[in-house]
Structure formats: structure tokens, C-alpha cells
Image 1 (cartoon, rainbow, N blue to C red):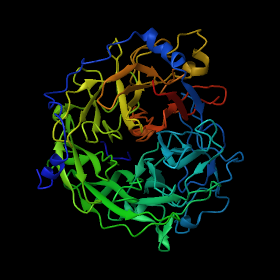
Image 2 (cartoon, rainbow, N blue to C red; image 1 turned 90 degrees about the horizontal axis):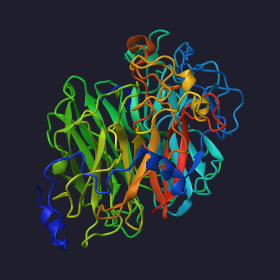
Image 3 (cartoon, helix red, strand yellow; image 1 turned 180 degrees about the vertical axis):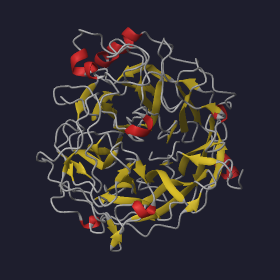
Image 4 (cartoon, rainbow, N blue to C red; image 1 turned 60 degrees about the horizontal axis):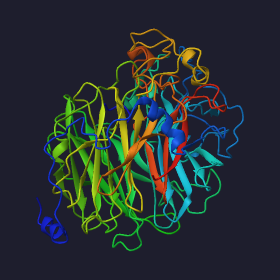
Length: 608
């Protein structure tokens, strides 16, 4: 997320291939319906070891640098901030920008930065497993040069041994001429090429507080559009950090260009049909929304192309408007997935208006013909008029992002491939995660169940769904049920609690030793294809971590006094056979993170 806060004639065809009774439609979202029952904090804390979970700090394994288009050298307050610093010597083999990048040639006076800068923060998570090689993984995240200035591009890290080591990583090249590249999300095609769908945009800093200027006359690079939706492709077999394709027909690979700053793109997502038996094999679906500030609304779009074996693709189709529940309101959070029959589905989240975001409703759109025509939205009955969480939770300053997650099943139930939706509900004054499934093509949905099984009410947030080849479904999420480490405990020093001395959103004593509903872990819950729970929530974090340390300041230190910080809106979740893989953020020092930067941690656990 950048600066935006944020029935058909084909239906009988779908019904005709259904067999067996479908579950009854949901009558409402009921927090407290926990089919696996709650578990004690003690049992949850021990579930990491009990289930043989492993953690690998991926982004501490290399030193990455790049030359930012716009420098921001101000050093922040306490909480561990170190400021934008010169590159101490990269180990990634990427182009660190000793001379300006080709796409920085149009920079106006004062830009780009004088030289390469160190990447310190690695906020926000996405993780993908190569469908042709389960040992080949690519993760991506925001690659920060300045947390205080919210100054970053997108970066990647790659493994060929199932996530044990990550020898190749660096920033994703091709769009360094923009101020920021944001919102990490990627997908593999059926040939093993990896597509990163990127949202680059420009701004300048108004002053040393980090406040931002978006006026066209103030933008730093006259040769680049104000913002865009773009693609970078890592070809199958690539070995070096620089091995990316970032152009199409001799120009940057733009899916959409916005140069008038009136229809601004955001929240892009990508899916590719990698099933060789699908009639739409290697069709690429790039989705995004455009926000109209004049009309105070947003609209959802899709553009398609065909992937080729060499990592190139056909021309992007003209963006097509997706069906909306309410054409005059605000749609967002498009999360496309393709089922084994080649039907492409996406969630679509509808807010009554951009100005009144107190509740939201969920539905799904779908296409039976490779994105040529679209149907929907089909409403999720238990996810209508859901209470939205606050932008920042109690006690901490980080903002919450995408409120829901969506995926398609890989194993049929009663002859149909299920679809699944999970979402956040703040109706009790604490955030809980609910889950529902449809087994008849979105026409009816199971009664929602609560995913998180904590005893004491705390905030559980940012769910992400995935489905394994054997039909197992997982929901991972951030979890605040365990207290921050106590003063004098063995965990307090490596968690960096003593550094957390400034927090305008916390009324307790600082540092927050032993604070409740404050520090963070990562959790997962597994289900069968019919959403029968498999055991309890499993703790995926070896260590509880403090989200206040080095948290990027989204809106500038002067305007909000550091009250709106960031750990990410996206979450990594995928399967490699029977191994569940999750990427998420931690500031804990496992011995490789002495500055308590936000790092990407890969958690691995076998399906129970």
C-alpha cells in the first residue's frame, strides 16, 4: 500500500457440473466459533518445538545496496534507527549503482543520490514455490534504504534447497528511476519463469521530517511517469542477481501508466495459469485498482498476456473493468488464483466509500474463458458489513493492511474445486480471523469459523491462505497472544526491548517489558479440504519480536510524529509438497541481526 488508506447466464454451466449437496450458506460471521477449541498460551508457545518448526533468517545472509533516486539522510529517533547510510560493500553481485542506472538518466538536478546506499530494512513478505521444482523458492519484500523516509525499492531472495539457504538476492532491477517500488507479489509461469508485478511511483521530500510531495512539477525524474504498474521477469535458470528481463518491445514493461495523477493505481496482484492441462495454460492475469481522488472511489481492473518459454510475453491487453458489487463505491484487494480447471477467481473487497471505511463486504469474480469475460461478484454471505480494524492497533503504531485473503482448492470436494476466503473482523474490539469455504462455485458458503484459537482477547491480523497439492488448506497470520519478553529474561536482550523507548500509542511503561497485545509472533492453522481443523494454531516464530523497532514511517515523522509505522500488508504462504513455507517479518536478533532491522524469516513445518 502506498499513500491510499486504505447472476449470469454462465452460472447454470457451473451448477451443472456440481455433484452432491453443498454446505449451507453462512448466516453471519460469528467470532468465537472455534472448532478446534482454544489452547493455552503455554501450549501455543511450545507448539513451535512440538511440531518441528524451523526458522531461517533469509535476508541477513547477504549485504545488498542500490543507488536511490531520492536520498533521505535524516536519522530518526530512538527504536534502533540508523538512517540512510553509504554502502559498506555489497556481497550480492547486483548492480549497486556506482554510476546512475539507465532509467535514472532523466533525473532533474539534485537526483539521484550521490552513490549506493545500504539496504537495512526488509519489510512486507511474499513467497512463491516453483511448480516445476519444489526446492526452488523466490521470496520478495520491500528493500529499504531509509526506514525514516519510507524509501525503498523491491528486492528478492532465492533458494534452490527448499529454503535452507538463500545465496542469490538483491534489489529487482529496471525501475530504480522511480522514488519507490512497492507491494511485493510474484508468480511462476508454467515454464519456470518468475514474474514480479511492481508498483513504482515518484515523490520528493518536502523537508527533513519526511513529508512527501507528489505534485508533478516536483517529481525527481522527468523521463519516468508519475506512477505505473510494471513487470520484471526472472527467466528460468537465472543464476545472477542481475538476471532479469525488464523491457517489452524495447521499452519498460508497463502494464499501466498513470501520468496525470488522477486515476492512481494501487494494490496490484498477479496469477499465472501454470497447469499444462488447462485450456488457459500460461495466461498471465495482472490485477490492480485505480483510485479516483475526484470521485473518491476505486475501480478494479485486469490485464492479461501470454507467457513464453524464454521469459518474454505477449502484449498486455487493455485493462478491463471487473464486476463490482457497488459501482459507485470503493473496490480493492484483488487476489487472483487459478483452479485446476483453468477458471480464474479473484476476491473483491467493497467499501461503501473511500471516506467512510468502517465496514466492508467480500465477494468473488471469476472468468471461465481465460479472462475474456468476467462474472460476479458472488457475495460471501458471512462476510458482509464486516467491522474493519483500526488503521493502527492498540499499544503499537504499525498500520494494518489487506483485510482478507483468498485461494482456490487443489483437491475436489464432491466433484468441485473449492474456493476459500479468510478475513479480519474487529466487531469485538479485538481483531479475529474468520474462514469460510464454497464448494459449489461461490453460490453458497460454509458458516464462518474462527481461525485463531487464543484464550485471551488480543489482535490477530493479516491472514494469508494457501492450498497444498493434497488439498490441505493453511491460514497463516500475525499473532499477539504472547507477552513481550520480561525484563531480565534470556529473550529480552536479543528481542531489543530496551531500545523501545518512544511510543506515542502506548500508555504503559517503556520499555515494554512484559507488555500484552504488543509484541508479535507468526502462526499457522491447517485444515482439510472441507475445512476440518488439523490440530491447533502452530507458532511459526522461534522468538517473539518487537514491531516498533526500526519500523518504517509511512507518512513522515513531522506530520504524524511516528504514529503510523509499517511491518507490511502482504504475507508469504506456499507449499512445497507436504512442507508448509511461510515468510514473515521479525526484528529479533538471532545472532545475524544486531541492529534489530526488519528481516525476512522463512518458517518451515510439515503438514500435520
